[in-house]
Image (cartoon, helix red, strand yellow):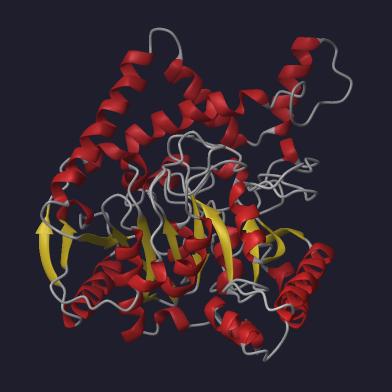
Length: 484
């Protein structure tokens, strides 16, 4: 039953020599091969690389080397470059791309001794809320395989929930770590923008993208975040701030902690079952000593329109290099240069990616820049100011992660706006660049529900502290989907 162990429990067992890295790696690889065909949470399984890394980790340990993550198997979202391994971004455009280097996040975890089990499935170029837009097919939610796992890190969250891997890296542009974490009953944290290097992370929207861990507990997230956070001179947006030991925050008591409940997040659009579970979670936080206060974030209604101007605008720029000439898929037998560009991009990109490129190009075009892009950036500033004012009153903000539990596969495929609205509670953290965490707080008709915590800049330790204390008195994070 090694798959039931959390990442930190595996770490302790490896240190105590209860089993070796080779044994746990072999065990999880067999489990992925046996169970993943029903979920489709992995795009690539790196079996030979994993066994090689596991043997190396066991040898390092035999030589007396130590790190909490030495020999611990994890997975990577398939938009982190991994040297010698396909990095597809869930797209036909990069189906044959073998990365020649490791992303900084991947390299840091390899340096710590982590073993790479494989690359997890995602919405194409991280654009989506349901993990149905991948070139490699949709991922299924292990709690109900007729439902979506959330996106875009849906493969990562489903694999962690199904106990195929104790943890995975993920990325979050508008909620892509937190929303799938909520839909799958696991814990995910989006750090402050700039806290974790984006070098080697294939960009969707550069001013919003942020990498972070998805695991079963806040304790596991703390271990992983400590390994990947920190300044990277290869990323000009990476912030040179000291990284605290997140592990030391976990056991702090919550007595006197001021928790803000933003009234705009509890509107009519919120599922009543989720509202009730949020209520219960708030009562647990109060029992732990937290003080609760209603606050207001007045510009939240503008977040979705602003996000869906800024993110596609940046995507249209970032994805312009995938044209069949410089990078990416090239169509067969083009008639001329124009035909090659047109058909390579039309055949290489899926419908959702093409839609966002068109929206972004329009928003940036002459005559429309001031009307759309500039206005969206002004709204972004107002949203940031709302949070700055709120954090003068409270220490953390608590709210739902999503307005609904996971929906049926195919239910919203034909209605992109309905999918965009599912990000209503997560997008604001990306626009403001704040750290945010989603943790399991219960179930609605058998489907996991997440509660979201937000904190001031670089206060990831505070988020992990609140989530860990909550997880010491609840067991939602320990629930396992039937059959896994």
